[in-house]
Amino acid sequence: MSWIRRRSRTTEPPDGRLPDLAFLTLVRDALEEIAPGSTAGAELKGNSPLSPRGWAVAVGPAGHGDDRHYDLIAIPDVSVRHDPPCFGDCVVVVTTPRDAAGLWARSAGACMLELLDGTGSMRPRPVFRALNCV
Image (cartoon, rainbow, N blue to C red; front, side, top):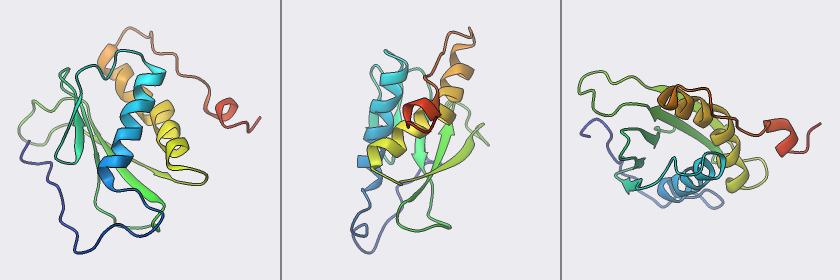
């Protein structure tokens, strides 16, 4: 996956911001929670969990927002060599990084898994109920 490169940082992440791989571990765990078995065999490589099923999620370069902002890029098929299909989304840590990763997994992450599954069997929990917003 030469097109997913770990960007170098001159300093450690700012206080309060998890390193990219630590945040992606939370994303992987949240995807597993909403769709058991979906991350089986996924390994953290470079700056992304890479699934044996051919999908990956990466943290994009910081372009806007503050230290609580994570840009995530979902790649449903890493076997495509040139211009792989992907979609970007972002999440902001309002309470905890675990909650932010879970929010992404229940929204854009669930969409990615549904694209891969294609059976309509993905039934993520409602986001607002999970956040006690209703």
